[in-house]
Image 1 (cartoon, rainbow, N blue to C red):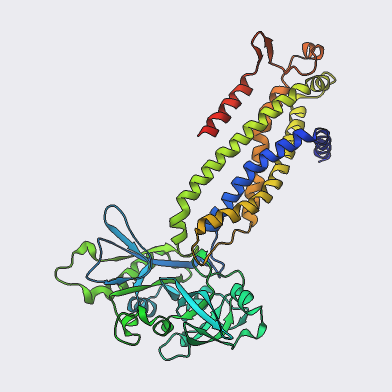
Image 2 (cartoon, rainbow, N blue to C red; image 1 turned 30 degrees about the vertical axis):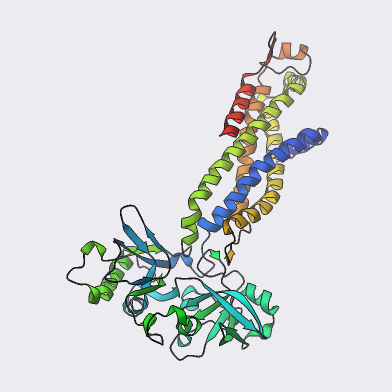
Length: 479
């Protein structure tokens, strides 16, 4: 430890002695490390982070697949739907009767929840002032099944999600801040949602945004308020039967929490049987077997995968490109260190001549490189804060309600530290090894500024490694 502190002090003195060189290297590394950290922050937020709920690894998202459109079973679908080149159709939307049957008869879930598959932009009025808000229709089991406890008031309950119940709502922490000024007396207040009187019963915790990354919900309301809030969306007779009783209108997303000790294979086997039973009444003699939907499972730990499906490939491409940018930065800094080693040739030769071991000098030079990388990483982390805001704005592309938390967490900080250390070793090792590999007698006689292994000829300075690094930089830059 005392030797390490000695190396650090010496490295700091050497870097302070050459501020121009230090500034160029630190800024170069900051651009490379900062760009990679910004992209990784987005990858972390979109692809890696779990939902801020209780035991998210127990959550399961239900989906279905069929070869061809299941026209005998479905005449309307609200939510997501994908179709590949082979004609295989997949979706996470189900009919409400299917949700009721799965919720009532399954033996593998401790709780089941549902939410409307479509987004809802609501007109919320308070004190006579209307304003738009992002809404989500959910079942009365939504908050209890996720294990989310409001910081004020109570959560929606199953009794709130039934025909004839008084309309109530839970608002998000962010909406509570923006619209109500964090008024602690907001619970019990009356608002209007699409001109329907609604009572606020709770405020969600600040970290909870819902179950769809990239979409921040302002107001959660019971599913059974849908006919009042959006009567134009009910395409059947007046009342709720058109949506809540029809088997051919698929519009709710279903998630469940696995019981302890229950495997995904058990869940899939049991629920597909229940799902097929819910479809049995609609099977016709002419129905093709391949068009009958079969139930599948996805992990629900990271929520709905709409954002992941859209941005996973572009993010990985960006990460690859930024990795090349970091390699360019490393090649640039390695060239600078090679040039600087020429001015330190006599210093290193003298230290070797009086008994310093070669690996001791290599460690000293690597300490300087890692210190430069650490400074570049610190500045890069600051640049990453700005970069992620820009990237989120580009991802939003003007879409209403798009919100993504990219606040660096321990995983992002660990990534930045790892990249900084790896970068320091990557660009520092080769110059350190080359500068300590020399023939002492001629090196002590030569004037400072001639690098070991470099020859002077009619065509000027020849440096194989330096030229190779320049060629690599130009090639990667052109790519």
